[in-house]
Length: 106
Image (cartoon, rainbow, N blue to C red; front, top):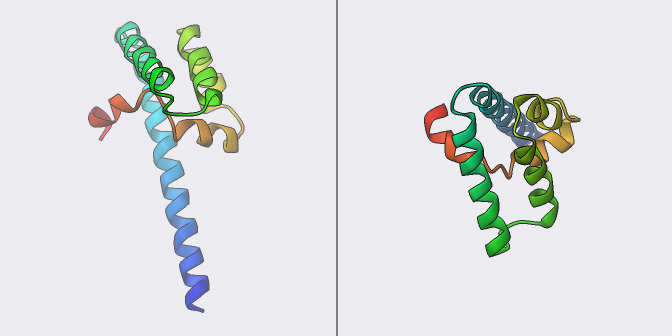
């Protein structure tokens, strides 16, 4: 029984983490609809540049997020991140160039 309780707890923790990521990226979406958009995208581009230069993550994440940031609009962000199939969306959200906004989100 203890093993099942641990599995249940791990599943609940994962669901809470996923919900937190979704909530944070909902906040990012809101900010991309504000007058802060250009500054936020500039900062995200710089973050992606660091990933490329330091080879800090896979080319897959770099291509994905580069495309989202290059589009430069909240609708593309919503479509490719928030409205994407859950598994893909959560995978991308775990390695986000918008993490600098987390300080103000909480």
